[in-house]
Image (cartoon, rainbow over all chains, first blue to last red; front, top):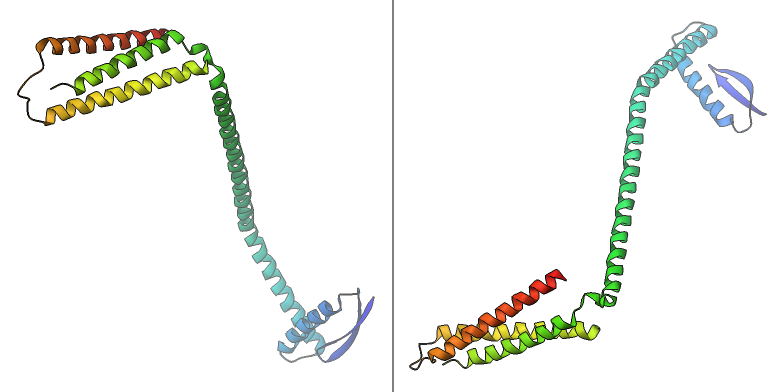
Length: 148
Length: 68
């Protein structure tokens, strides 16, 4: 425990508080002292009474403001939660799209790898026929080029 | 079997080049004045018949390839 010496309305007070809370207590005493000094004359007890009433009024007013602000902060919290869930959904969609792209790429690669090993569709007869047609068209080209 | 693939590619390349030669020759011919001496009618008919025959052969080949 710590001992703190406070002065409020010109009167000293010795107060105990938990270690580490000394500066906070001194600050609170200065708030009370300032409030007492603004009270009109009368006895010290009367000044302290009015100061206490004024501080209680201010505390109540502050509490009312907090309560009014709570619904707004609830809305903000809901908006943040909604944005977070949308972001998570978008991230999932993106991941799924990347997975689809990778799968398609793999399929393409597999098809490309398989292409040289699929000679069953090649027909040697067709190749020979194509070669013969190439011969005939080349001959035709020569003839056309030699036309007068 | 890869040789077969190469053969078909080679043949198609030759056909494409020959067709380009024909196209160019016909284009040049259309752009120059008419020759004093025309090609004999028999030669022209033979040429047309050969063109028709080659086209027919190509059609047959394409149809066969389509059937697999």
